[in-house]
Image (cartoon, rainbow over all chains, first blue to last red; front, side, top):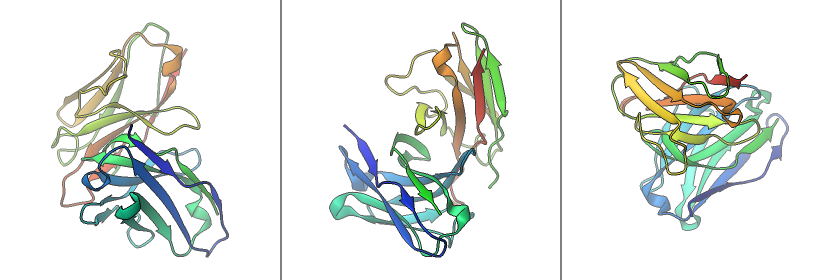
Length: 115
Length: 112
């Protein structure tokens, strides 16, 4: 069974750093793109970026380029989303998903970040 | 790139059919057959309902169908049920030379 399990909710202060995770199981982790999606309170879904674990090829939405960093650790089948200096406006639910041409067939349960 | 355009809300009575449109450009919806639709209930992660414009994942009822004409994709839900009340988002591939995926703004479906 394919599963993506995200790390737990976080409460941070402005200016702090944060790294949240998304662990894949039940499939070949290195052969599928992983995407990160933001959902601010009461708002819609926004693509942040995508990473291909097989070669760490990473693409960022222009809105998030330079604001976050996406990485993977294939030894533990885990993708990461990282901030170096959080802002109040980063308060949101963050979802990871397994993506093929932007079509997400499996989603993580979401990680709520409160700044 | 700009978000795809969806109506903010649609409604229908149980048993009726509703259609949700998703309008893009020839650089996204009109240019590729990689349009997907997601259902999101309050407090839950999105769920894939349609992929590749018309395909349904295993387990999605056949009351849900997708189509595309030109730069506009549509999700049609027939035989509306109370459990279909949710937010629906479309998504399209937009090519490898830009950031290559974009969501619609979302549509709130109310079952009257």
